[in-house]
Image (cartoon, rainbow, N blue to C red; front, side):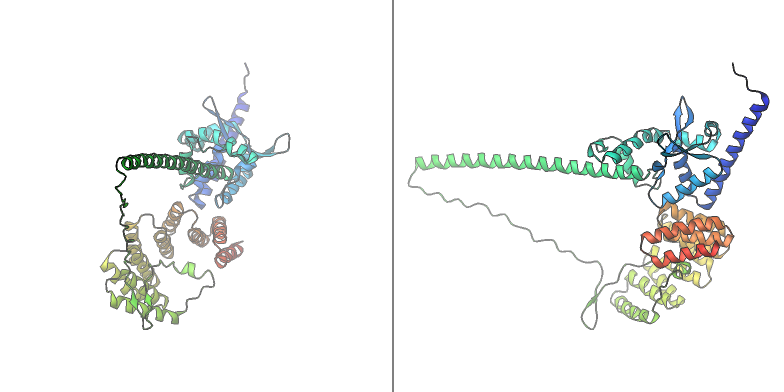
Length: 455
């Protein structure tokens, strides 16, 4: 029996305790930067473990397995770098020189309460991931359809994961699931075509059989009476007229007799976003827009979109009172989320922050997942100095749509104002990447310039 000296035992316990403290510290710091890091750290660490006899053991993870779709990949790589710098993870290589990442110590895995909680909560995910990852890697290497999971019972669940806000699939697994779904559709379409073909053959066979019976009947009649002539007139089926589609949008004729239709209302984003790029609103052109909506509203005083869009035109002329009057008139016709958000923005411009927040709250009562309402309310909270509430709203917007660059940009502005440079830079980087994907070059450059100003 091996006996560990007390001194060595205490040193071992102290080392493990230190690692657990570092893990908690790094995790807490990252989550303070972005709430989304709760998921990101979970994704990384659950790949680092294997379960044997109920205990967690280190699992060397190929670097290729830790490559995720953007923008999640940016955060994943930051977690790996920070955890390696803290001594929680370590880079290794196999005998062929292939790079891996693994946890520093097995004891850490079984002592870190947060990881144990994830292991218990996502036990089914671990089981599925154990099957999915090697299957996806084999398909990636071979590129053969026979390795896809188009017939696997887990595909429906993985499809839900792929479209959820908690998508833990890495890049290869994402491609594997997408191709499996596509292959299943192809197979179903092929089966449908085959079944349709069989149906056509059956119908054709029935028609031939029916014609044969008719011919036999006609021959029989001719044989009985050669002097009788039978005329057959096939029944004519009436073809219905195509349905008429009536537009619900009232058209108003201009002097040139050209119809004008009011577009759907827009949602304005606050000044922090308008001033990023080189976008300039031509205020003189807004007068033409107002005249257009004057004619629309005269023709149909109940057109809610007309009031909202006329309000936007007044807003862009800096005529906030007239904008608010139009939004209020729209709300008298019917409570509308666009009217509430845009009126809240106009109130913000006037410095009436509490009225603005009240309108954003009303918008959220109509749609609790309105990203625009959360972002704009967060901007107003920031202007009031209520930074925690602002950060909570921006994180909520990100949890609803993690590809919303405006939410990350607004988060960067707030962290910069608080003096948290590291969190601000991380937010701006994510915003810059997403703006680049959407082709918003001026917005991307604005985010990059803010990073340079901090560094």
